[in-house]
Image 1 (cartoon, helix red, strand yellow):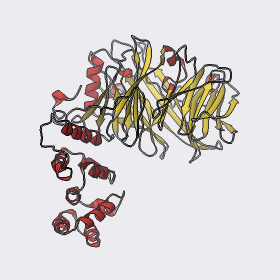
Image 2 (cartoon, one colour):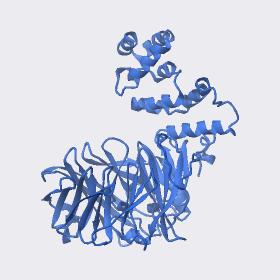
Image 3 (tube, one colour):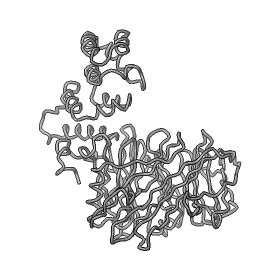
Image 4 (cartoon, one colour):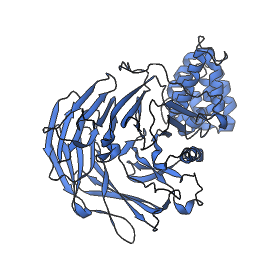
Length: 531
């Protein structure tokens, strides 16, 4: 083992490759397994080995075990996701698992199962085991604070504000493992305007400014009456709830931090956010992010300024500031997009800053609404062509607002969907571990890998369709949820997909048949891209 490590440090890639191959041929299975454990450690020095040699070393491992080694480095992830490596790994599959025969016709259920697993792993998602479809309320749900904040996913809990006559404005928490629903109401059974969810608590606030907190076992924690009902942003982390109160004209801004376990409150005032333009317009705060471990508070404000009388072009601004829990100013960042364009003629699809969603990467969060490209960066739009899109993200480690630009082939599909009558703001994408996920308002929940681009996609069929209003996506390690509006029933529906093999998902009404993905052989053909 020391010889392998010394070779990796001493020789360049061209010179050491034949020596390493010769050395690996002499390793016993036990030594290869020991080498595997070393390679699997992130940032280990053996990550410098040529990936072709590593595949040779790991040839005794199963395909799914080999796939986990993509975590070693970005280079490994790219190479292990290439078509050449995938084909080689598939050819070895029947050697390690005699019961699986990839060489058999693709019509066999076993082979289809293998290819579905391969595609989902290439996209950075585990294997979809089952799905569930539920109704989550009627049209009144859009009237609450931050429409997308009406839904929340944390661990195996999915929460939303009930808007039907039976639910009467209560907060509904759906246990995705047990299939049970728990209703949380205020002391006066008043309607709720916003909620936030963590793995330990559920926090919700009424239109009258009353804040309630409770554990998932229905144990009531503290509740306080806020000094104002002017809530513009709401967030929870662990057992702490953050609230932004903002008065008229953005002149009075207070951040309140409530520890619902200790039942203690701290608050501090902050200066108003201003757009960095010649007008110095105040920027209302709409998003709040708190970090209990780092003891930081991040506030985000947005403003759009029309640049022409036809309301077809806007300048979009986002301002961000970071404070400590003690109220000390720590830093700021900003983002602007000039001359944002919409299709002409037609209604302007404005950029609305919504709450942050964790992107599956340490410290990276994404705003759940797409940003339209600048007018000065694109040619005049044709009829049926959607403005170019990107996602706005927040890097918590660097405390910066950053952009995530979609691949051109992703944009091509948005254009085709947009041309069929769907507005751009109804195609709401999500980012998870470098994979774009889109809840199509028509029929599919789709993902596309940055590395594979157009060649590999993965579609999960939704049980309900919604064309009139934006679909939303919630995702974590075990579940993916796509919400959509069903105009015929005048209801919001949620399509829930379980991806965790280790979960015993005994939810009434769940379909345990694995969701079918597109065949890897046809996904390379642009005529059979699954849409």
